Image (cartoon, rainbow, N blue to C red; front, side):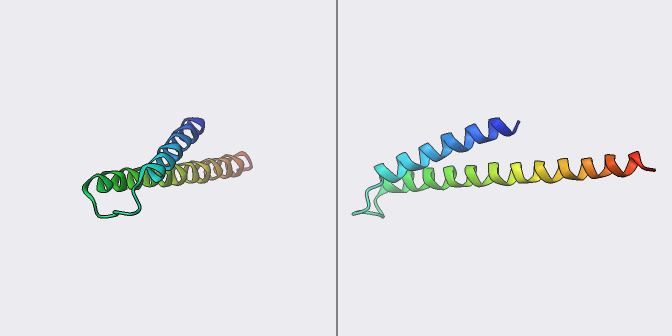
Length: 74
């Protein structure tokens, strides 16, 4: 499952880079730029969600390993 999240992060990163290249920095408040800005935000939030999800999965795996280790000695 973690590999799938990493793939999603890479794709979102590429989309974010594409939006940064397409973005018109001379006219920030134009209507088409607002769409690009929303796209950048969604890609950034997607990357953040995948990072937090991987972190949560690692913590849960460590917790279950600890519980298995304790139950083996009880």
